[in-house]
Length: 385
Length: 67
Image (cartoon, rainbow over all chains, first blue to last red; front, side, top):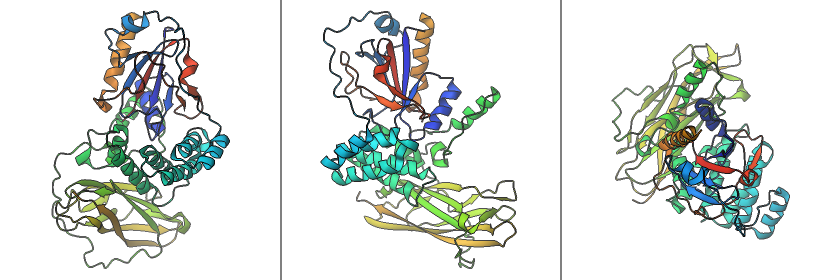
């Protein structure tokens, strides 16, 4: 075109998902990644027409008048170019020194942002500590709380993952949103993983359509480091249909417990704090224990999860079954999520959801294959209505 | 070219509608103000871009999400 440069800024936790979307849409203009709302936006999309001198000329322009009001207009050089504000330093050492000296949320955020965005491997470990210190300096700083959540989720999606990272991310985002409930990007970040009863739309239901379209075009879809989970592709739900009565698979707890920890189970609740009558999405992630050289045995009953729902609570499923893949054995991470509604008369305070998983797992290639049970306990906080 | 630019803008507006929040604000971005500098990495992390590097050309800045 010559007359116009289109530049994108993507508000995304997972940049490769946006890259897949751009590949599908055949968009090849430069797109920048902003996982931490560094631009300060509270909602998207926002389109801004900026002239050759950097001056804003139109906001959310109309297609019918865009050319006349912007492209075809001549904007003279301002007599005095307005000040854009002080240029931010990108020197992490200088920012770290300033953060240590000031110990303010703003200074720790500035350092954390630079390390997260530009450091080697995005520097997520250093950024996580920086945002912890920012939150400690100012717990009421929503921007720091949100960034802390982003850093936890980045670590969760990395080889450096630690148990509890996903829940820590959700809790930090929850604190951020409580401090600024008008921040729609923060709200959407929680809703992305949250209950269907609170979803405005399906977030990533386009992924399979995009992949099919790209393969049909003879292209290889960009690989995703974190596949969208069921909660991220699910459609909104207006009402929760009660779970159909179904026999409990091990009511007398006769199945041998997985004392050897052949399978590691992680849970997360989105959101982690709910009011009586509100919904939450329970995420369950199952990993075979590499230290035990364990793998799934797919030639027996599939992995099943049973939930003991407290009185007054509702769920769409009490027995969840994860189908086996076609191969006889495998070692993939398995995950699922289920909708819950907390009792309308639940008292404020800590609450516990229990259940168990039943699975077939083998130790080493020609080792012993076992049918095991692992009990599950999920804590959540019921807040005052 | 004129028709294609208008069509492009219309398509951009429609494409990002699913994630649209009606009251998307433009704080700090009033007409007549300098747009604040933005320095961010590319999506693949291989490059760093600054909004100011596009000075000298007209820019349509599209802030969006794929969700």
